[in-house]
Length: 201
Figure 1 (tube, rainbow, N blue to C red):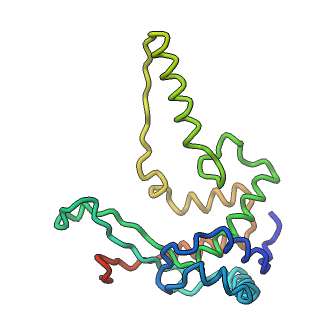
Figure 2 (figure 1 turned 120 degrees about the vertical axis):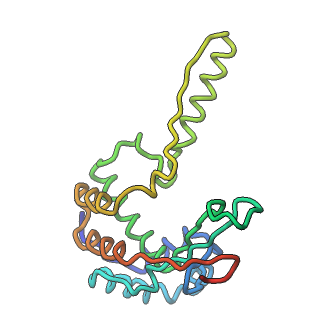
Figure 3 (figure 1 turned 45 degrees about the vertical axis):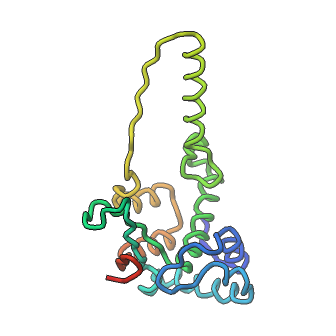
């Protein structure tokens, strides 16, 4: 993979794709403001490049706010809460730029099969099996046939992937060394602040 040089156009594209009012994280900066203040894109590009070259980010950018959202009205049972972590907008913008570059590298070198597009942007990985299942169901019903089916639920599959494996995959796919080390450093400093009913704990 070629070395990553972050430009103001990269920042502008990442900001353009981002939702305006998604929860911003600790610093409180929404993408709406980054979309409006175009003049800051050049400054952000320079700062992102410095962070990438130094292979580190300040802890403010790697700290997320985890909101404990109740699944039902039973507020006393801790297992009935769904944790949702909101990352800082600046971190999301930088990782969006790096993700775009990595995907471009994978596509250019045909590393991933097009069938492996469940998590890829613009992919229809989950819709395709559902459509196939619906068509099979209609054919079976119309022709009065028997069918056996099984589904495997990979609940929390992404939560259980060890960071060591993520780093190894980046190495196997020959992602730029600077990007690999930078992401590894960021992973090592990921932290979170718990928030319950609007109050930090």
